[in-house]
Length: 224
Image 1 (spheres, one colour):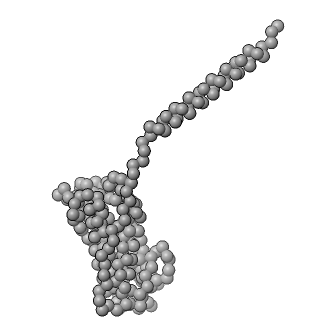
Image 2 (cartoon, rainbow, N blue to C red):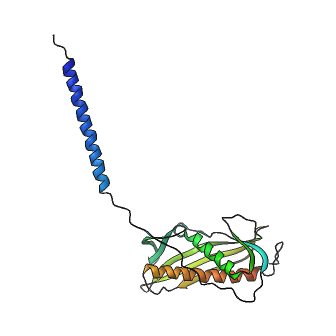
Image 3 (cartoon, rainbow, N blue to C red):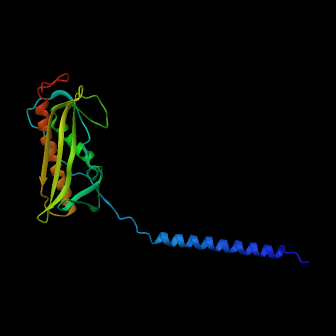
């Protein structure tokens, strides 16, 4: 009776070679699939254009501290995409373009910059620093987008702001600020410039309002 071992070995060897070929074929197919996957589109990143701010002459500095907090906002307005309403209430974004920071951070930093240049409040901080402050400026970002009207873009920046006395969380005053700017054209760089102008206009108006509200206050109390 002949031994069956050689036949068994040949069968095992053949099965091993078949399995190896299948693994190799699978790897090649996977590599070929990877080569045809779409490449990520390049994204341009935009800073909020610099503000043109100046301090009013002859102003006194209030011996107060103010914290400027990042505005709250809806999902569409709290990311880094540049939002556009191309028609009606349909929300979209500019393709291949991002802000350098989330929109609420850009707006908060522009407001802080406006307060610093104005220099009528002695001590300023942001919510990131978590420093002690007598008062706090909180807000809700209701619009930070371009809207097409009559086939042309219009940049809209709108904030619902509240001044709070921090020791008792009392609202001293509230106001909605809005700026609408028609860019010089429909190119994205021109629209971005419009965002800078509208943000600066809102920030400057907010500074004047806050200083007026806080003028009769001290660090300990406010007569409002």
